[in-house]
Length: 103
Image 1 (spheres, rainbow, N blue to C red):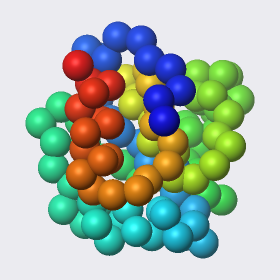
Image 2 (image 1 turned 90 degrees about the vertical axis):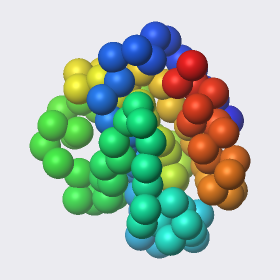
Image 3 (image 1 turned 30 degrees about the vertical axis):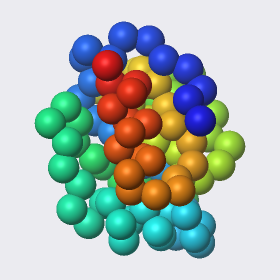
């Protein structure tokens, strides 16, 4: 599900907000993250309850919208959230959804 999007031209990272107890997160890690390759973005995993300071500050400053479920994938330009994908079902579906919002 695509929640919103703006220009994706300045994206530098795909942040995956991960809960170690989420079966969909674990499935993504095993099927995609282990060998993630994309020509437009690099993957960075942010673990729930172990968020880096910059991530917490971005949420507090509303540069990252509230996270209501896991996994949540955030296209990040280094300063702000550009777009997001929520949920994971399969590797093929994930890459299709990612490519769609990167167009």
